[in-house]
Image 1 (cartoon, rainbow, N blue to C red):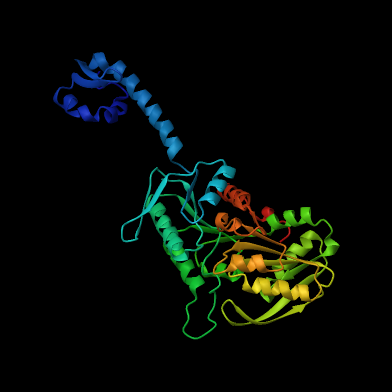
Image 2: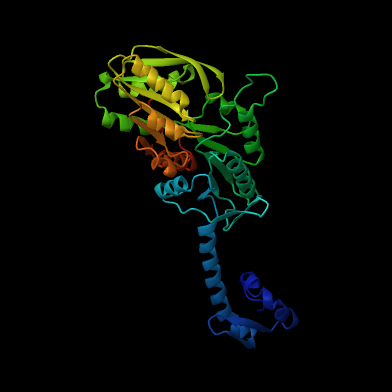
Amino acid sequence: MWPPSGWWRLVAYLDINAHSFHSCPKIATIPFLGQGLQRRRTADDVWDSAEKIVLIKMEQGRHADEETSGYVVRVLMGNANPKLGRDIAEVLGERLSDCEIAKFADGEINMQIKENIRGADVYVIQGTSPPVNDNLMELLLLLQTIKLSSAKRITAVIPYYGYARQDRKTRPRVPISASAVAQLIEAMGADRVVTVDLHCGQIQGFFHHTPVDNLFAESEFIETLRSKYPDPSDLVIVSPDAGGVMRARRMADTLHVENVATILKRRGKANVVDSMQIVGSVAGKRCVIVDDIIDTAGTLCKAAELLKDNGATDVIACATHGVFSDCAMDRLNESCLSAVYVSDSIPQEHNKDRCDRLHVLSIAPLLARAIRRIHDEKSLSVLFPHT
């Protein structure tokens, strides 16, 4: 009986020769793989061979689709921090998806994702560190490109959230830039945002429809401090401002350090401190200044001098994000700080060669664990048992 059962399985494969079937239902012209030629036979004679070829091709196609599509983890990265992106993928045990990012002659960003991500759980690793505007634009275009590629879920992994310090109106006629960036990220299609040590936790509220996971990098610093300075009674954890007291308190509790001090400062304008004073006792102690960002390092170096003047035996700094703009490296080299620990949320390869006191700790394991747990729909709170 013609057509035989399973005829529909043959249609797709023999689509290029459909005219042969339509014009002569008893005679078909079909390609035979590996022979590079075509044989003309009656359709009844060639059916068995054709069915075997079709089934093989269908099986190969099925495996190919399983490898390149479906709800699986896909990791893409921009140009903000390539080393961190590669480290996260390595810890995850995932391959970085092929994404080509370039610029046109006029400076506009051009990009293309070179593989299928339809239906995938995509994680975009792209901070907004300097050059902040280029990296921010790259992040926004990556998010839209992934959205247009029909990914099932898009998570923006932003190790350093630029514009975070502009989180409120401090003077008339100024923008709330942290809010504007959040709205842009939402508008480009991010389903979730993962970031590290936001300058202000309330920034999470600027994302009206997108959940935000604000990870804490202090666990990476705690292990280093615990190994280098095993006697907690010799330490004082210092917050450089009133806003960082909770961060300092968490670290002190985890290290079993009893003493916490705070530096109160008065700013005339951004990056310029008019006056500073210490709340707490630091005499005869090794002080650990804990902050989220080191920018020009001017305030940090002044704080270290103030602690030394008040009897501190040693001063160490720990900060998640080492921006190190302006003459920051020169200031650190000339300061009384014995060591400065930062994470690799911002690339530090060029800074390590300029300052022997600078030590870089990786947050790739932290972000990789968070990505895996998000994909598996598990809680992230187990990553921070001390919060």
